Length: 223
Image (cartoon, rainbow, N blue to C red; front, side, top):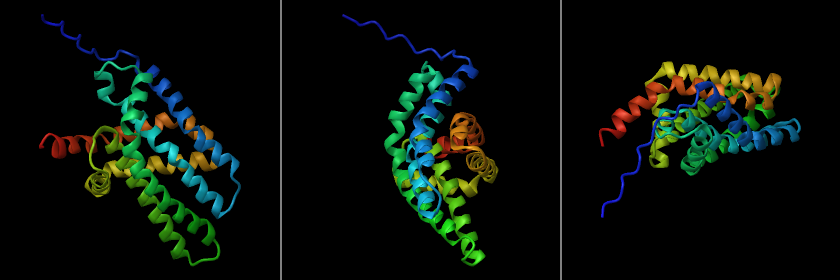
C-alpha cells in the first residue's frame, strides 16, 4: 500500500512589514536580559566589561532573527514566530562557540579602554579601540555565516575573518551599522537599540548578501 505524498511546503505569504514587526518583538524579548543587566550595572571599567559579557544573549537572538528574515524561512512556509524559533534552535550552539570567546576578548579590551582612558598613552587606548572594532566586525560577519551555514566552529571563525578583507564594501556597511548601534545604545538607551534591533539586522543581512552568496558558491555548492 502506498502512502500519500506529504504536501509540499508553500512559501510564507506574511507581509514583509508584519514579518519584520513580529521578528523585531521576538528579538527585543530575547535580548532583554542583556538590556536589563546593562541597566543594573554602574559605571567604571569592571561594569563596562560585565556589560559586554552580558551580550551573550544577543548572539543567538541575532542569528535567529537573521534566519527568520532569510529566504529559506519563507520558502519553507514558516511564519515569523516559527521561523524565529527554528533559527534559534538551529544556531544557538554554533553561535555561542563564537560569542563566548569573542565577548571574553571584548570584555578585556573594554576594561582596558575604560581603565586606561585619560591616564595611559593615547596609542594604548587607540590600539584597544581598533582591536575591539575588529573583533566586533569579525563577530558580526561570522554570526551571519553561522546563521545560514553549518561549518565547524573554527572554519566559521576563519570565514568571518576572511570576508572582512575579501568584500570590503560589505564590511564597510557593517562597520557603519555597528557605529550607529553603539551611538544609539550609548547616547540614548540600550532598550531603544533592542526595539530597533530588527532594522539593524535587516541592514546587516542586506550588506552581507554578497558574503552569503560567495560562501554558498565556493564552500557549499562546490562540495
